[in-house]
Amino acid sequence: MTGPLLAVEDLRTEFRTRRGVAKAVDGVSFTIARGEILALLGESGCGKSVTALSIMGLVPAAAGGVVGGRILLDGRDLRGLPDAELRRLRGGAMAMIFQEPLTSLNPVLTVGRQIAETLVAHGKVAAGREARARAIELLREVGIAEPERRVDAYPHELSGGMCQRVMIAMAIACDPDLLIADEPTTALDVTIQKQILHLVHELLGRRGTAVLLITHDMGVVAENADRVAVMYAGRIVESAPAAELFAAPAHPYTRGLLDSMPDIDHDAARLPAIPGFVPDLLAMPPGCAFAPRCPRADAHCRARPPDETRLSAARVVRCWKPLP
Ligand SMILES: Nc1ncnc2c1ncn2[C@@H]1O[C@H](COP(=O)(O)OP(=O)(O)OP(=O)(O)O)[C@@H](O)[C@H]1O
Ligand SMILES: [Mg+2]
Image (tube, rainbow, N blue to C red; front, side):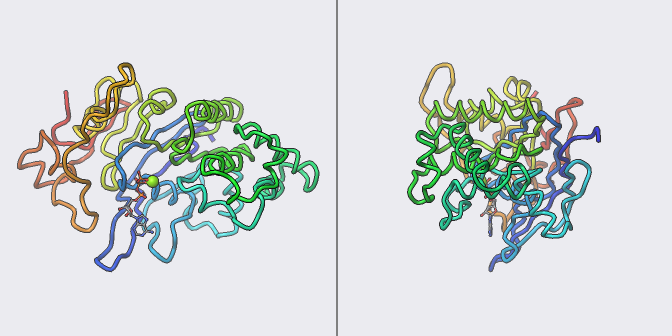
């Protein structure tokens, strides 16, 4: 296959709530090539985690689910695959570092056992001594001190940051083709952050892993991402090569996000966030979802949702009045 490793096409994920149906992901499309890092940006509640969970086939079925679109991993549509097949892919061909480390580790198994089971289940090592040794090695790689002792700890015996690192160890254990990292470094100090991102780059270089990186940290995006997709209220409103997006954002929302980030060079205090709030998914405005907060919006913006405009081969914006 020479196409992108991951192609998400018109993905739609909905949740049924008492007040109605919330379109948490509303027609999202993007691709990630082998060896590429795509960053997904956007304020809280914009649908970043739900996009990630949809790809992994982990949207809680009781609450809702993927209702449309295609998720092509190496050309194969993950939608409609039998559960057993999806489970086989998870942790093997595709792995995810979850935003909530504690909820995704098994509380009744030692962390060493969990890592070892992943390795054995995906045929990376034989059960027993070899699996344990590799688990210890992985714990060391993610910066856990005294891994020979920590390997026998239960998740509740470790700090949040350490659980995060255990989860990262599990995610990289099987050399996945696709790695989804949802806020992988927020609970970690700067040194460990660097170490983790170094591991991700190492994996990417060695295996050609495709990475979907979800983070609020612009510094992390600027230093690591090849391309950026900006999400707002369940839609991608701008996507561009990282350098171009930072140099000249086209969507007023992207501009607002960049302006509200602390200045990396000057260590300045955080500037005021974009005024207003992310819209209620159950009461979306009729036009552009960002119009109520947008300094450039006019009557047309408020009346009709914008179509996608291609600015160049690699740049797309969904805005009636993109920035020059
Ligand atoms: N299980 C669920 N049931 C109902 N609504 C949900 C569920 N999970 C997520 N949502 C809604 O879907 C929307 C997108 O949530 P999501 O977790 O993807 O946001 P996010 O971009 O990851 O935010 P954050 O930056 O805070 O992690 C939100 O409005 C959220 O309330
Ligand atoms: Mg999230």
